[in-house]
Amino acid sequence: MTALLTAQEAEQAAARVMARCDALAAISATPGQLTRTYLSPEHRRANLLVGDWMRSIGMEVWQDGVGNICGRYEGQTPGAPALLLGSHLDTVRNAGRYDGMLGVLTALEVVAQLHRRQRRLPVAVEVIGFADEEGTRFSVALLGSRGITGRWPEEWLARTDADGVTVAQALRDFGLDPAAIAQARRAPGDICAYLELHIEQGPCLEAAGLALGVVTAINGARRLNCTFSGEAGHAGTVPMGQRKDALAAAAEWMVAVEGITRAADPHLVATVGCIDSLPGAVNVIPGEVKLTLDVRGPEDGALATLLAQLLRQAQAICARRGLRFASEEFYRIDATACDAGLQRRWHDGVQRVQGRSMALPSGAGHDAIAVAADWPVGMLFVRCDRGISHHPAEAVTPADVALAIQAYCQTVASWENG
Image 1 (cartoon, rainbow, N blue to C red):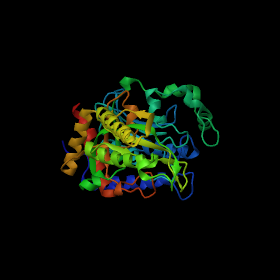
Image 2: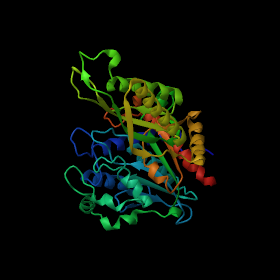
Image 3: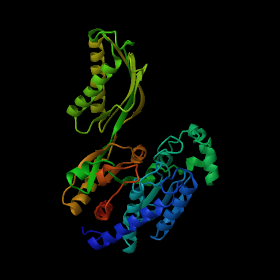
């Protein structure tokens, strides 16, 4: 199959995407920064702008019951199931301009190329700008993508933002009906698959010297609160051999966490992110240390094996030192596997334009997690400068974006043959 885009067309498409990323970045609640949260006036403005871009390429446009902006480019047969493309339009506070937005805008370029050629596929092509992936305003994520699956717990309506505004009130202020959020749900037969392009948010593609990579899975995660309990004592009077120093035990374990995880699997990661040493006095041996453990990986079995090994190591350290160790899991999300068939389609598209393809997991969460509850999902990563994301320094190059659009078009065009 011939490419949908020539190199020059891809360059022009990338220029449009970069300019539109800049235009969306200007829609912000904070001057000099980019902050765009769910159901805010900025959310409304972004939806209106993206809706206009959708209409300009022949799409039917609507905003659904949870605030997602949606566009449909009809297939050869009206009412055919849709290949859904997209990502999110909301941001963290003081964000970069490509996380989420790049996936929506490159999807529009795929449809634009079909529209310019008056080309229809056996499936419809829909583009969605999800309303809330980050969870910045109400501290619960994936509100937009969980809306289309119908998995929107009623108790979410009572959640409040920092100003005490409930989700229900914010929906009303936005012009939506809290009692009608179920109308955002899409029937299983409406959609055949979901594709999401996203910046990598990590350094792996850059290290490999590649612009594009195909995602195998979105990492599962376990988060635990851990406690080392020893015995506080006078820093000057308790001999070293008689101490039950909780901080020393915790420090030994943290080094072990790093070493064990490094040796386990290159795709597994573990982080001790918070630590609190008590009583916290310069002249007192720490009697108790509280810390967090975050463990992630693309396969739940391997993740469980690593976590069990780390916890056994903590117990062994405490047994040797005469301390006690306790842990409590407070967060869990299973790994989300990307569909094998969609991975093959992405790999074929990437190989056509890049010469070779690379497979890698996603360490961050994405809307594809929610969508995968009902439909097969596939993701493409685009290299970002130094792996920086959720930061104003977030950056991609026009050349990489052009390559990504070419691969995206090739992948979507593969549906011509079913």
